[in-house]
Length: 131
Image (tube, rainbow, N blue to C red):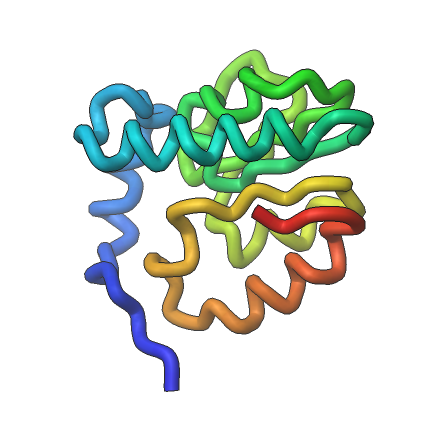
């Protein structure tokens, strides 16, 4: 049996927390280290890839570091002016992505009540790598 490892937030709390995309630099030392490592790994593995999606992109800092022609950003927070931004919970937005060569799913699973459905959808849309 899988259990959520982060406390669930109410819709009001989520709306307040994600009124704007989070700034990855303000999430503490450990988050910065994980972000740097993930970005380095992704840069190394995206050579020759044509598409990538991160549906928990925050301020988009990870995707912004990748040299990939098609980038799909997503998050609970809206990003005005970004035509490649999908807004909403990942349980919904993952079904709005057709196929991508790399799907980034860092710092997501621990926040989900039912991660299996999101992971199953991820295996269908990630035609190459799942990070």
